[in-house]
Structure formats: structure tokens, C-alpha cells
Image 1 (tube, rainbow, N blue to C red):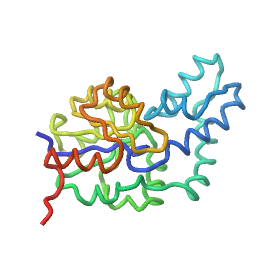
Image 2: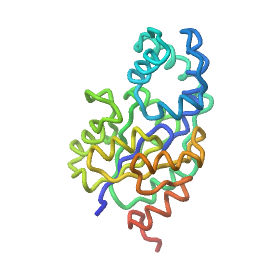
Image 3: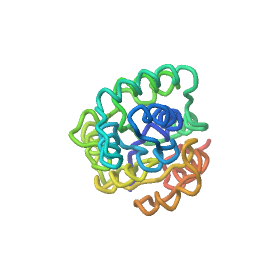
Length: 226
């Protein structure tokens, strides 16, 4: 029985992935790498910077310093987020309607999460329940950040449902012994991604926040309407 929910952040709560990968598409040619934002989203959605850069270095036979690259991206993104970042439509209302405790577990670092949740007015939903891959040894698709969230919140993994937009996140949830739902409400995703998320292990794929609300209602995780 599901008694707790763990949300990914980028692409689930906030529409940040489309902005982030657009920055990558602009910066990577400086290192001899030409790849589109769409390709990056499909391959590296939910993956930490270090792991993404390691994969790019191997694929394109380059030697990008992940730490310095992340600093460049974060600097550019900070300005972009201030102007353009939004919560995904319907997410604040969905969070307000949940009848079970919930947390956030993300591949983003804590400073970025603090910035993004503040800009989108979502921070108050996750007080003392924000967890980052920087707090564990391995990022997604390893289960570490989800297991950390469950441990710190005092929840059993088998009682948790993970909401994720990326195959790596779904795989991480499976490895943690948690059920998972795929989410396609971010601008970087399309309905064509449903097959990929199901193949990764998602028990259901929601096309938008309304679909997600309906599925969570079926699981009795939404407050009853008086």
C-alpha cells in the first residue's frame, strides 16, 4: 500500500529541463560537441552533471571538466531561471490536494533546488524534505537518493511511490524497491516518451498534471472532496 510520495524536481515540479538543455546545446560546441537539446533530454534527463559529462566525454572523445562545465551552466541558468522558470501547470494544486506525506529527491544540487523552489513558490511544500544527489555517492539511475529520502523521512521503501520524468529516475526507483509513475508534463517531453518510461518500469505514465491527479486519486492518495 502506498503511504508516501517522492517527487523528482526538474521536469516534474518545475519546467526547468527545457531551459537547462537549451543552455547545454549552446555551450557544448565550445568543447567540440554538437548535440541538440532534444537529444540531451532523451539521453540525460534526470542524470547528474558529472555522469552526463562523463558519457559525453566518452562518446565524443573529448575531455570536459565536469565541475567547471557545471559552473558555466549554473551561471547562465541562474539568469535564465530568474526570467523564465515556472512551476509545471497544475502542480501546486496537486501538491495541495495530497493526503499523504511527500518529499523531493533530485539529481540537482541543493543550492539549485533552493533557488528553483523559491522562484516557483514551491519551497513551503517541501520544508525539511528536500534531498539531492550531492548528498549520496551515486546519482540516478542508482537508487541512493531515493533511499536517502525514505531513510531520513522514516519511510519504508516499499510504501513509497516515485514520480519521475526520466528513464534513469524510473530505474532508480525500481532499484530502491519503490513503485513509480512516469510524468510527461514538462516541455522537454512528448507523448512518444511513454514507451521509454514504461520500458524502464513505470506502472503508469501521466501525460500532464491532470492525468497524474486522476491516477493518484485512484490510489486514494488525494484528499476527499467534501
